[in-house]
Length: 263
Length: 257
Image 1 (spheres, helix red, strand yellow):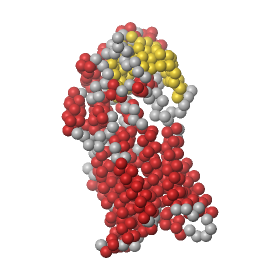
Image 2 (cartoon, each protein chain N blue to C red):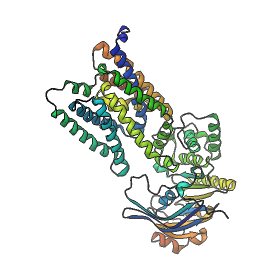
Image 3 (cartoon, rainbow over the protein chains, first blue to last red):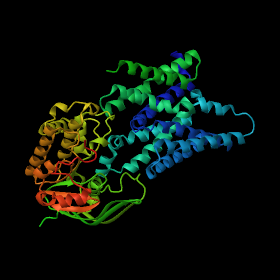
Image 4 (spheres, rainbow over the protein chains, first blue to last red):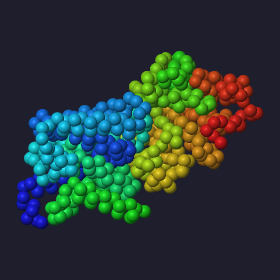
């Protein structure tokens, strides 16, 4: 097991898992508390369309998926702010369009596309140096934006009071939407498109069960997001199962434990 | 000569087809205690939101048209320093699923952001304010575990800790028992005596309003009556606002069993 950590691709996998695990679970507390769990699903499928377009154009999928998913996320936020449609409806529409586009792009490619399967179900061992740089850059950005936590939290607690206190609530909403989209795209290789929503929601939901305060919920969520990656990857290595499944199942186990143990 | 706490000239708000407020003219001197009464859908909450600069709602209510002028302490609402105004929203709008302690809610009023860590100084100040409204025992209780009346006290402490010059309360007596309501008026009057602040309070309880308020505003999309309670709460004004009125002032209104 320890000698496995000497392998560069496993080192990259571990680092990638820890980075996106921390990022997804950190933003996840806002997603869960704002009842936007479906957003993760919607954006994962926007990432799918972006990846499919990248593969079709023979470009690095990441560079196509990032602007595509961020664009969709900002558009969802815009529709939510501008209309009385429920969040689920706004997200559902973009979800459907993204899947339709993704399937269309896929079908336009000649021949079989084994790489597409890797994106759907994750393939943490194919994480490249570039992927890591992008993840690191996003993590740095989120860390620098740490003071925004108290603004997001305030508007999550009570949007009207935050507006009454002249908070730029809308601006912070768009910032949150953009960052969630970025994290979703870089999580694709780690957990796969179909599992990203779980990856964002489960650590925060588990933390919610165990916390009396929102700050505690945030800290516990990040701890779960980061530390569930280690046993998840170990299981993936030892039993030769997909890493994404293993990580999400570890998180689900922790959620079940929290549910039974909560006071 | 100080500016009135609140001044409105020909102020109208409509949400699409629905006119919430129509040509409202109002002047509230500083230090007044105004009870706002009126039927459901009379624009009472919209009026308070206009004073907060939130008349366009949370941007989800479709096209909102606003005309006329509003001044709070002589300034357009959005230019009023946020600390000058304390706001206690309607209790039914609170999201109790948010993991928070009562103390954090009070500190959020002080910081105008959500606290990640509460400093010893903030804790002391918040506890003193909770003590003042008789809610010190609730400090470390979770929001989700508070009753409606307890929640009101916590939100009152949250708005008073800012030492506002203008206090806006949206039905603070709803879901509060009679003792709790008497307490609420006692706290508000004590705060007014201490700071000379202005209070605007939406209420369905006429009797209490009559005893405590220096003026009553009867609103039904437009101003039906405004002045000292004994003048305004007359039979004619009330029937104009509500269509029909029973005997005395102990009316049972929609939303209150």
